[in-house]
Image (cartoon, rainbow, N blue to C red; front, side, top):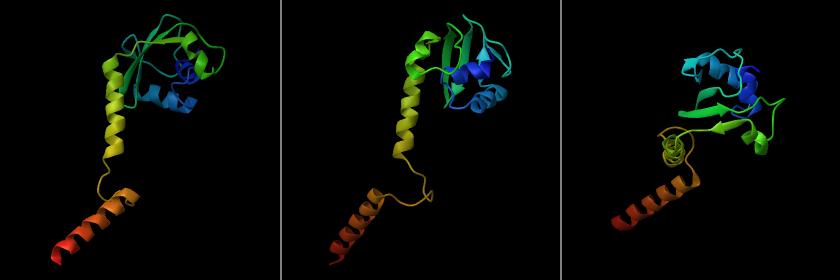
Length: 127
């Protein structure tokens, strides 16, 4: 089976074209070497997939006949990603939720309420 099709079948990428793009950019490596999307994959291959700034390490157990459900993915691969990499993903998620750059879109309700409270406090101090 092709590498891009395998990554799509085991649900690492939402579409096959995203898996193909990742291979072309060099984000997919087998035994330390970047691979083309058309490279054949075999059981016992060790892959490294870079996705969302995290390097996932995968060992191929078997080749699925077609795209599999999320519960069946563990039959076809073993995820050997170190815990440090997964913790890095959590930190990235929290940092994106907390910080919004100035001038990027409308303020949220919370931002508006904070501004109103600040304005009311400054008016009270003047009086």
